[in-house]
Image (cartoon, rainbow, N blue to C red; front, side, top):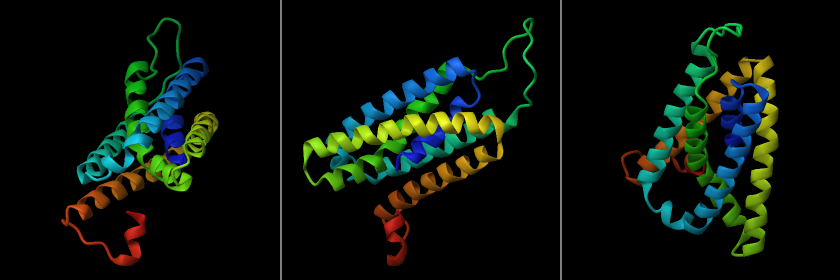
Length: 187
């Protein structure tokens, strides 16, 4: 479940020089860990509100659109020492990482808290392990996306699927939509 966070962090970090890329990944991993700890203690309460799922899905759609613009919307030019950098804004990218961490931490927390069955040490270990996986996978994705832009599209599609699942799940909770029993496990 940590892969969705890693994909977003990797997609965002891929547009930056290696020094900034490492910082974005580091801050993204730290934020993911903090949000997972916070959400672990309030997951049951938060998921009682379908609007949280809908807002999370909408935020992910916004992030997908923004990432698509960053990665593929602009023609990249070779940097010149006399011209301004074409790198996206560092702060805007950090905000994207934080929004993604907030939105995508829900599913991970639910899985870890459910698997730990009330064992606090096991829960913290599971959350820590997921954050370590995010850091390593995000670094790999950021480097790989630089060489293979098509992977960026695959990552965007994965994130879009998660966003749609969150929105449909929230709308189902409000009884706006009805989901066939066979497919309920996906929402």
